[in-house]
Amino acid sequence: MRFKGSTIFVTGGAGFIGSAVVRHLLRDTHARVVNIDKLTYAANLNSLPDAVGNPHYAFEQTCIREGSALRKLFDKYQPDAVMNLAAESHVDRSIDGPGEFIQTNIVGTFMLLQESLRHWTGLSAEKRAQFRFLHISTDEVFGSLGDEGFFTETTAYAPNSPYSASKASSDHLVRAWRETYGLPTLVTNCSNNYGPYQFPEKLIPHVIIKGLADEPLPVYGDGQNIRDWLYVEDHAKALTLVLENGLVGETYNVGGRNERTNLHVVEGICDLLDEFSPSPAGPRRNLISFVADRPGHDRRYAIDASKVERELGWQAQEHFESGIEKTVRWYLDHQPWWREILNGGYAAARVGLNR
Ligand code: NAD
Ligand code: TDX
Image (cartoon, rainbow, N blue to C red):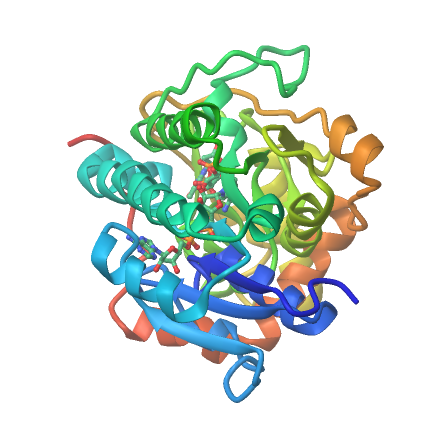
């Protein structure tokens, strides 16, 4: 009876990973889920088709930077756990406009910690012992790897982008609130997620949508940067396991053991599109276009996920080849979901060149 009688706050539950977490909690556990989301450009309540009307689900349009609004939610729902996924998440946007990243990722996490602490301090001893604050972070806080090696939980922080620096900062706040005030916190750092309902600014959905339209497919730099891909539903399961069985004060790296160069990923999507939806304009690989590199572009990320595998029994179910096929099919089968984003004014233009 997982999470029976528990109320879980999921911040950023209308985003890509947050919505996968909400769907997983509602489908596979008994938790009552409160989705706290400001509804920025990246949010989409259509990513939660089965949540509306579910008696275990509530939605609150609230910004995590607003302490008094958060306080009302803690008082109203009396949560047993907080999963913090609300963030500005796109590296390229952080290059052009770091301010929102500082405000939401750092100040917002600070506000959420403060209100969680206030709530936690007022709980009974038994409830205090059970309460958890799980902060969801990224492997980008560790910086960039060379050809060898992996990020582990003890790798030193060395963030290179405004986005990753803001996430690193929030991770440190979470740690400090445990060490100093005793708030029962945990942190996860994961690699690049992909799968259904991802906003089309990110590499994989961007290339699928541009490829379907027979438009140029932008590959930054030489295309040899490596990312370690994690299917979003595997990630959601890992997060609930960490919430359930993780040790307070620990950090867990989550990754799918799927390192691929960006060029390999883009070529693979081209071939799948050609197979599922051939174009009279010819093979999609002809659309690949090498463009100016991202400033401060990290070369390689790779996660050593052995701690979460060994200690919590988690294992990624999806291999990249199966996950990318599912993902391409999903975008083909769910065109209204992303066409609404394009019709709503998202231009899918290049950003983040610091011009
Ligand atoms: P996303 O951009 O798809 O969604 C973020 C959500 O947070 C949106 O629904 C948005 O409305 C909400 N939000 C933003 N600012 C808010 C605020 N001030 N108050 C309340 N809600 C706010 O992001 P994602 O890809 O789902 O990422 C979720 C988390 O996971 C982030 O913390 C991100 O740093 C982390 N992460 C993401 C990846 C990835 O590959 N996508 C990898 C590692 C870590
Ligand atoms: O059009 C593109 N062409 C391209 O070559 C885009 C959008 C990206 N890229 C490259 C840049 C990266 O090397 O592809 C790689 C992936 O880019 P993104 O999808 O922007 O992801 P990344 O910068 O790696 O960050 C992602 O993973 C870690 C998430 O956006 C972060 O929120 C997460 O923390």
